[in-house]
Image 1 (cartoon, rainbow, N blue to C red):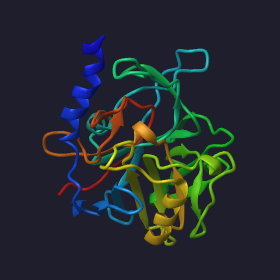
Image 2 (cartoon, helix red, strand yellow):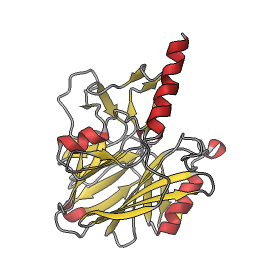
Image 3 (cartoon, rainbow, N blue to C red):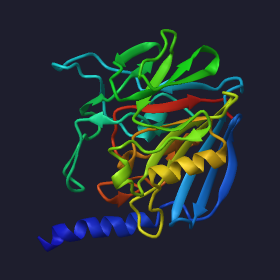
Image 4 (cartoon, helix red, strand yellow):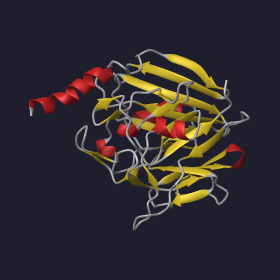
Length: 288
């Protein structure tokens, strides 16, 4: 029993040293895509990873995890994969986690669901290359990618017919350039958390993917809904949607040797361990 208890401690100790350093960094990843890492100390230790995408840059286009043939009573929508697997499989330049999903279970570092390749269903709309394989659902808002890299956020959860790619989240954090208060079921227990957010500026030309690491004491402890909204307001976001968070939060970039994680995901309490998830949002971009 003691040996079993020591396994998570050993894994944590080894993996925490491979996390990104708590230093600021800003660099161009690809034409039209800029990455910024911010090591903050207020209101608590934080690591913020921010991707700014110039949607007017030729060659940039979004791509969402495709579905699979229906095999279950509800219809198997897709199979779980990590974000790095997604980026490598579809030869993308960057990728992040997207929809909340089920089923999900996380008990121990070895007892969790889903594992890679296991069946999962998304919550809210998912559209890949014009094929909507996860239908809109009440309570799940969407970000819709239309032709010519036009982006629409739909609180109703229903994207326009011409939508080419779409993913869903739960709550708007910004609308009309102003922070949105936490919903009633969140407000009383609004606590720091790992977060993935997608946002756009007023012009509709700059798209941000913002990931905040969490659950890692003295390294990055996450942001509350209110704090995340305040950050987005300072950034200049017009509209922003909260995507799946917690252990799902992952940002990956393509490198000459394959996809590499840029943030510090944490699965089953082990830093730098990726969680297999249901849907990802990625981008093709011109290569340097």
